Image (cartoon, rainbow, N blue to C red; front, side):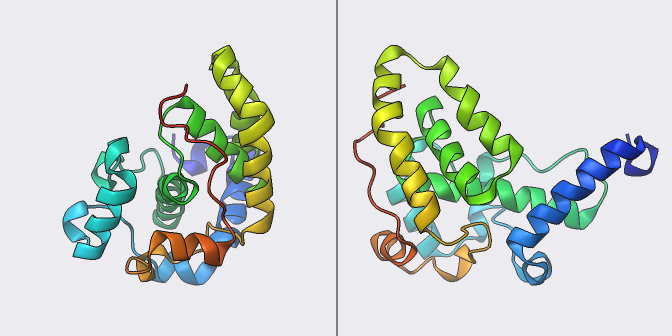
Length: 188
């Protein structure tokens, strides 16, 4: 359904979300910042980062489907960029792409953005977890994600493409992101 055909309330909600995301990303970046669409477009430094930090998670720019059902080009960019930044947060936070890792990233995003989708994912995602994962999530990973989310600057508007050459450890230190309290790769 096209934006103009939606009821007024849906347009208002969608407009508020777009305004919120644009504020986080910065108007300037919606015009200048490239999309991380294809691994073929990445420099050797980017490929190295993906291999080292995310290769074991089977995530790459090519695994993301393009944004659909969005008529506005700038809005499609903002949504696509948000999804790419979410993937980069997995790397920065050292979280796998399993359910436990997704929930931890959602807690971080909820603190950083206050977006309802992040808050809901953080609160209701744990329903799917095993008792073993909950014993790690609640006392260790949630407090760690909240602390890092508060301490770090807003990571939605970080120009990641200008930092591919920067070692991951140095970027984490600069952003105030500490290592996770435990290794979560095998949990969930």
